[in-house]
Image (tube, rainbow, N blue to C red; front, side, top):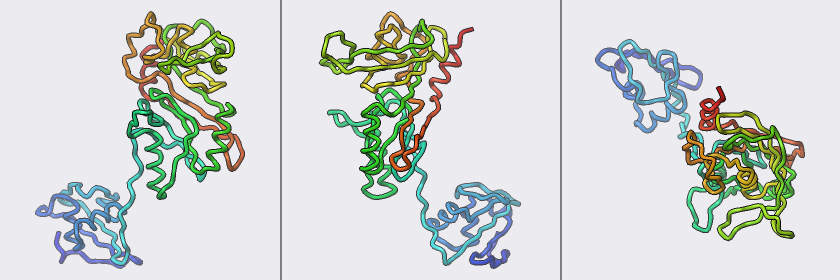
Length: 319
């Protein structure tokens, strides 16, 4: 390939450069492109980002791609256009985005992530990472916390993007008007196909929760459950949180004798499960429904079960 062999052709606002790789010029494609267009390497990289370079008829985005004898290279380049560096798509280990609009952000939280920092002031909490995402799009754009998920849980959550929308959403969640569906795998075999757990939840000095019969103590907590699959020494259940007290489903299931797999705080030691050696909770927020703060219509958002839970179910089906 040499500068004397190509013929630039004017195509509207762009100039088209094309040639075929010769044996003496095999190597990285960005070096081949530089032989066609005399630009600094940093600017050549931007041509790849903007899809200006094709290899054998296919757009090439990787400047380090190797080319061989006979490969056809095509570059569409406009010298007057400022090829700005593109923002990389947001990627974060703590969450993925399910839905976003002007009022709210619905995400799929990863397991093992704190929703908000405790008094230990842990870094990289979910609230911090969601705020960083919004701030990247618009400076000083704050994320407004609406509700929480336990650290070991994963699944669907919603954040407000404005004070007005956050207030509207918090009212629904605080008054238990939002619908919350949670999937869990518990130890042992639940006797009934469906039922309701109801108790008054109180708090120990170590912040663990428990059901109390003492009059005037605790908060009313109601969890509706439905068995979805019976497994080997375990049961998959769908839980509807009629109320949303801290740890309520975990406490209710533990007190029934069937703790959620991976729960080290609320666990019946007489019901171990040898197949579940994960550090995470076998618990996932699959669905939330609420009234949208602007459209005032009911909206529902779901997130799929994580691979860890799906693999366990496949490997634990009754034979």
